[in-house]
Amino acid sequence: MQTIIHSVLVVGLLGLLFGVILAFASKVFHVKVDRKVEEVRAALPGANCGACGFPGCDGLATEIALNDGPVNSCPVGGAPVAAKIAEIMGKVAQDSTKEVACVLCQGDSDRAKERFVYTGPNDCRINASLAGGSKACTYGCLGCGTCAKECPFDAIDMVNGLAVVNKDKCTACRKCVAVCPKKIIEMIPYDQETIVKCKSQDLGKDVRQKCTVGCIACGICVKTVPEAFEMNGKVARVITENRDQAHPAVVKCPTKAIYPGLEIKKEEEKAS
Image (cartoon, rainbow, N blue to C red; front, side):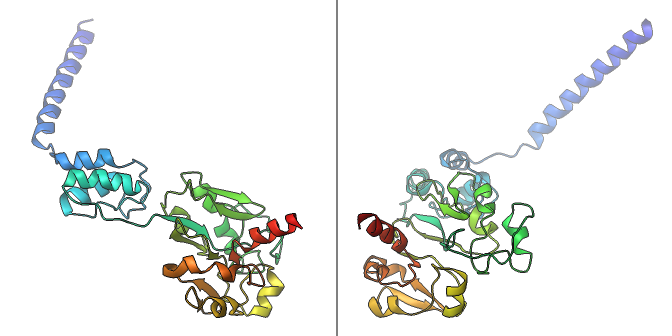
C-alpha cells in the first residue's frame, strides 16, 4: 500500500513539475503575433485553398500585414475582402477583374469520338497516361471528373462526359486548372460571354474526324471581326480587350466552336 502511495505522489509531483516547466517555456518561447496579422486573417474567407500562392490563409495574412503584400491577393474573397483588408492596412483597394475557370472544350459524349473504351480508375490523369487518353482528340476533356472532385466549392458539374463550370459558384481558386492533365481549363473574366471553347492544334480535316464542335482554323471569325479574334497556332482565340465586339462571329462559325454558338443553334432549332 505504501508503495502505491509513493508512486502516486511521484507521478503527481512529476506532473506538477512538467506543468511548471511548460508554463515557463510557453512564456519564454512565445511568438508574439502582430495585431494586423490577426485582423487580416480574420478578414480572409478561411478557404485555405492556396490559390493566392501561399500555404493557406495564415501565410497570406502574414504576407499582407508584414511584407506589404497586395490587399487583393485573395481570389476567393474578391473585392469585398480586398476592401476590408485595405481598410485594416490603411490602403486603397485597387479594382481587380473577377475571374472564373472555363473548360475550353465542348466535346461531350455525343460530339467527340473515343479511340478506345477506358475502364480504369475514374481519374483523368490516369486516363491521360494511356497514350494520351481515350478521347480521339488528344486536346479534349477526358470526362473522368477529376477537376470536379478537386473543386472545394462544388463549382464543376459533369454533363454527358464533359466538365462544365458553374461560374456563379466558382471562386477562382485554380485547383481545377492545376489538376487538369490536358491543361484545357483556363481563367477568363467573369463577364466574358464569347469564348472559343477548343484548344486543338490539329489540322482542320483531322479535327472534323474527331469532334463536331472543334475549331478547324478556318479563320472566318478573324475575317468577320478582326479586332476581336486572332489565331493561336491552329485554333482561334478571343482578344480579351475586345471581347464585347466578338458576337457577330459566333453565328458564322461553321462548327460552333465559339461559345455560345451551340446554344444559339439549339434555340433556333426549337423555334423552327
